[in-house]
Amino acid sequence: MADFNNLDNPNAFRPIPGAIVKNLTLKHRILASFAIIIVILAAAVLFISVRMSNVEHDTVRVNNEAMPGLYYSTLMRQSLVDSFIMTQDMFLDMSVMTPAQAAELRARLNDSLRQLDENSRHYEVLILRPEDRRQFTDFQQTRERYREVLGKVLAEVDAGHPADARRVMDERLHDAWKTCRTSINGLIENNRLETESAAKDIAGAVYDTKMALMAAVGAAILAALTLGLLLMRAIMAPMQQLAEGLERLRDGDLTVCLELGRRDEFQVLEAGFNSTAEALKALVGQAQHSAIQVTTSVTEIAATAQEQQATATETAATTSEIGATSREIAATSRDLVRTMGEVSDAADQAATLAGAGQLGLNRMEDTMQQVIGAADLVNTKLAILNEKAGNINQMVVTIVKVADQTNLLSLNAAIEAEKAGEYGRGFAVVATEVRRLADQTAIATYDIELMVREIQSAVSAGVMGMDKFSEDVRRGIAEVQQIGEQLSQIIHQVQALAPRVQMVNEGMHAQATGAEQINLALTQLSEATGQTVESLRQTSLSIEELNLIANGLRHGVARFTV
Image (cartoon, rainbow, N blue to C red):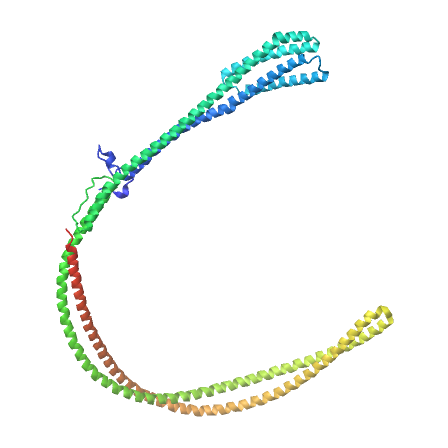
């Protein structure tokens, strides 16, 4: 059996010779399909890259050699033609030209010759092929002959021999110019042909690229369709068989077995399906056998449950009779417990009230002691307050003295301001204001002195009152202590009576509790018996339902073919 989790292992599926394609896994088929399409596209990309490289080379040749060469060769021809025309114009207009015009024409001629040389140098830089180099060398020779003859013509003109210059021009310069122009035309034609050739190569490469791209796309589409169809057939055929097998399983036929005859992932699926069918077959067979056993066991359990239900009913009736008698005993015990509870509560209440009175007296004594302490503290604070009031009184006396001195100084200042006349008027106003403030200070300090004296009088009266209050509290404490001793004797007697009453109450309570527990136990027994009867009834119902389920299970598994 193949291992579905080890599909990356090349030995997971060993193809039979002669059936390699059939035994390829789906993973390998998909990868092979993509590989074929990628190879087609890669071949197209390689071919297109080669053709684009040629296009790039031709483009570089046109941009860097042919077009610049054609441009500079055309400029060279233009400069050559301009120089020859200006030489002819020199002879035609020699009789009417002024020296300035002749000098200008000569300068233009020299500029044309300079441009011819400069363009020739630019053109020479662009030469790469040997044949272009030979043709340019021929041009240089014809240009030098033309420059030589033109130099002789200009020399005769400068020497004042126009007739000789005209003769040299007609006999030699015209032929040299034509030869040089023919050489330049050859350069122009050569560059034009090279440009056309490169353009044709580029157009051909573009056409080849377009056709290769269309062919690659068409081949890729065709391969994708073909490989997709093959993959679909490789997947759909076993999937259809698998669907038919599942349909038979759904109809209850557990004898179905797949035979796909594949050595790919479907082999694992086939093995899993067949294993599942076998497991279901064994499970259904076991379920049929178990259903029969369950039906038999349920019948036996139902008979036993009916017997137990009858026994539980009799037990419940007996328990009810015993419970009635126990309830009568418990009622009598509760009455006795209630009576003794009232007696015990009365004793407890008396002891509690006596104890509360004792605690109240103790708290009252503690409170009076705290009141005495608070009164002493108040006396101390009042003494301190009286002392502070005396200090305030001394400060008031000092402030009065300062106010008197301030008033005296303001009076002196007013006198000095009167002496100063107009210049002291502002100072006089200040002195008057200071005297007014000093008077107000004296009045305020007098009021403060009166209030301090009143406070001292009130403090003295408070001290006397607190002393009298402390003495009264001490007498009250002595009386409370005497009452507390008498109440302690009463509490002792009540507390001695309470335990005896409590012992009798506990005995009656224990008797009542025992009766209640007996009654409770009988009640619980009665309830348990009732619950047992109900449980047995529910068990009977459950057994009936289980019997129905067992019959349903038996009929349900009976439709399967094993």
